[in-house]
Image (tube, rainbow, N blue to C red; front, side, top):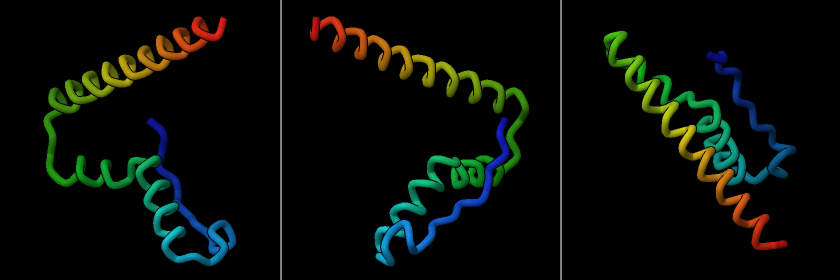
Length: 80
C-alpha cells in the first residue's frame, strides 16, 4: 500500500483564483484517498472485515477496468 503524500496547490497553478484552488485541492485529496483513509481508521475494524472490504474493492476495480477495456475495444472496432 502506498503512503499518502502531501497535497499542495499553489496559487500559480490556479492563477490566484481561490475557488479553483479549493476545487483542485479537493480533487487531489480524493485522488490520494485521504478522507476515505481517515474515515476507515476512525473506528476499529476486525482484520477479517478489512480483508473482506479489500477483496470487494479489488473486485469492483477489476470490473471497472474490464468495462473500460471492453468499451475501448468496441470503440476501436466501430472505427474500422
